[in-house]
View 1 (cartoon, rainbow, N blue to C red):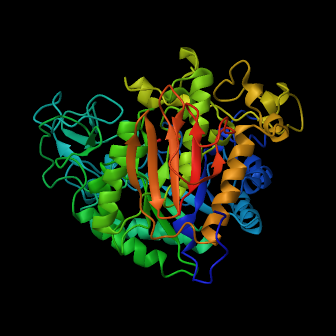
View 2 (cartoon, helix red, strand yellow):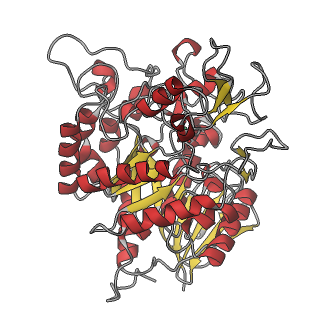
View 3 (tube, helix red, strand yellow):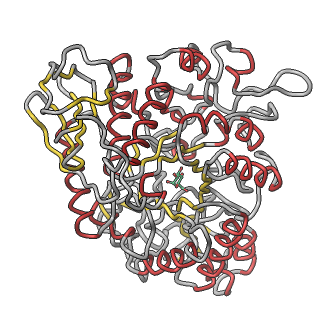
Length: 538
Ligand code: GLC
C-alpha cells in the first residue's frame, strides 16, 4: 500500500513527534580558533542543523564554569562562560535558530553546582552549623578520615570530601555524587527550589524553548543519608537506589516546573535525564510532570535482539501504566558511539546505520547526538590527551564520544572545526582529531548519496511525512518480538512496523511494503544482516 493521504485531525503537540539534535558546543564548531567550540561557531553552522530536518537542538552547558566536568560544574546558572562567548551571542544564536525553525533547549544542572559557585564558597567560609551550609549536604564524619556514609561517587571513589581539611575544628564533609568540584545541593532546603525557579524563569524569559534536566532523579536523597547496602552510588546499574536517589519528593519539583513551563506561550518543554529502569523512569513523565525522559535502558543497548525486545516491551508496559511515551536515543556525550558499541569497523558502521533507521521509526520523540548523523565511531583518545574527570577518578573515559566534528575532508583548520582566526593558525583542538577523520567529513558526505548523512536526512523527511499523514500518531506504542533468524520486529501500530536483521543470515520480512531501509534491499521480501526496514502493513 502507499502512504495514506493527510487526514484532518488536530496535530500532536510538537514535542511528541520531535527529533532533537544534541549539540556538545565545545566540539561542534570553533568560531574564534582557540581550540574549543563556541557559540559563534554553532551560530555559523545552524543552517547545517536545519538542513538535517530536525525540530530543534539541545545544547549541553555553556554557562560559567571551571570546566572540571566540561561545564556540568556550573558556577553561574544565568550567564555564558567567556570560553563559549557572551550572553548577547547566545541571544543572537536563539534568534537565528528560531528564524530557521529550530527550537532551542538548554541543559540545567540542578543536582549540583561547582565548588566555585558563590553560595558554596560562602558555605565553606561560614563554617559548621551555619545557614549557608544548609544549602548543601555538610555533615560531620565520625573522624577526620571517615566520611559520614558509604556512598560512592558516580565517577568513582567516595561521594564525600572534607570541607576544610586544614582545620582542627571543622569536621564537616560535603556530599558530591560526581567529582569533588561538584557539591550536591540540599533540596530539602526550600531556598534551593526558589533559586532554581529563578534560573528557569531567566532562560524561559529569554525565549528558550525547553530544558534538559541533568541527573533529574537524584535531587533528593533519602532522609538522614543512610548507608547504601550496595555502596552502589546514585544508581545500581540502572536500578533505582532507594538509599541515594529516586525519592518521592522530587516529583513535586517537576510538578512545579511543569506549571511554570506552561505559564509561557508556547509552553516550554522539560526533558529529564532519568537514568533509571523503565518502570521507575516512567513515573517522571506522568501527567503534570516532565514532558519527556530519556529511555536509558534503550540508550545503552548493545547489538542483541533479545535485549532490544525485552527493553522495548518493558518500556511499553511502563507507557501503558503511566501514560508516558518513551523518549528514544542511542547516543549522547556520555556513551560509547554506536558504530563502535555495535561491533566497530564496517560491521559496526552498518549496524549504526540500521540502528539509526530503527530509532527514527520508533513511537515518540527521539534525540540524535552530533556526529551520529555522520556515523562517527568512538575515538581511542591518547592517554595523555584525556580530560574526562570520570576517567581521572577511575571510571570509564567519555572523551572518545566528544571529539570535535570533521566538517571538511581537507585537514586544514582541523578539518574545518576551526572557522578561522583573524591572525595566525588556530590552536590545537581541546581533544585531538584522529588520523583519517576526514573520511567522515560533512562536506564529503553531503556529496555522497549513500552516506549516513543523506540517510539521516531521508529518514527524517519521511518520518515527518508519516506524522503528517497520521501513519504515526501520538497514541502509538511498541510491541516488540524476535523472529527466527534474529529478526527484531517492533510493531508501532496496525499500519507500521520496523524490522532489523540482527543475525548472520538474510531473513524473510513480515508481509507488507518496505518504504525505507538502511541499505538497498538485495532481494524483495528479504533483509540482509545488519539492515533495517520500515514496513507499511495493512
Ligand atoms: C550527566 C551528564 C554528564 C555529567 C553528569 C554530572 O550525567 O550527562 O556528562 O558528567 O551528569 O553532571
